[in-house]
Length: 369
Ligand SMILES: [Zn+2]
Image (cartoon, rainbow, N blue to C red; front, side, top):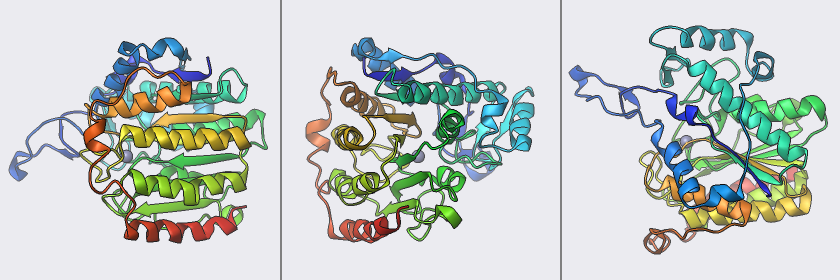
């Protein structure tokens, strides 16, 4: 089996409370208690579709285990790790630090298992046990900073797994590709000065965080040139994403020649997402996966690891996840029941203002170290 897969039921027990979307309920403001946008449902249902479709039989299950404090410390400060651990031990839990990242008692242990799953999957791919893999982990990681949680993220699962792999392979070169609808600001920040990691984020322009993700952020010091942001206009569909791949992402990977491609996979760029305003479909995610597999075959012996990030439509996210994993594994079980409608939505084709935004980012390929 060529594809590794990480999931654990405990990821569904990470409790983000009864928010009104992304705000605490507040009767005086008219905010009625409901679910937090970031809740267990989408992730559980992706896993259930992977099981019910039969795809799980064609995946190599990799057991997650808790990351150690030493592994978390490869990215995060000792003070931050201690802070999350202490809040997590209290009766009512706490927050990652930005008041947008609430958690209940026990969140530290669950987040450590998410990071540990990321580490184990990356290790298995680099060791050649599997070619590629998907870690369906929760809480997500791409907004987390060294000294703070942010935007539902506690620990930077992807960055931790890269730096853990570098302990045994110090020259490891990695390209990260973030197709979550939000900017991968944490990953960018962690590797900002690191020329061994080329970070690429494609995201809805200034959706979240509102103040990061601009094209002008290109890495600093020795890392200059090794960060590429592709902020996209709201309403970008499969055509725009594919053009960004063709014009920026794939040429950047070819130029950088990594040993591993690491994806921050968010399905909140999908056409039905309640937070994003993009039009990507399951078939669109599948084609992006294929494009990465083709370039990975050229430059890095097929090695691709994917870490789950956002995605908040509980009905459609499972199909996006299934389509990515079907392509990674070469085992095709189901078609997209929504496909005929959403793949033909007006607006799926590349528009001129989207082309201009992508062309502007392609000017930076020349400075890739
Ligand atoms: Zn997101």
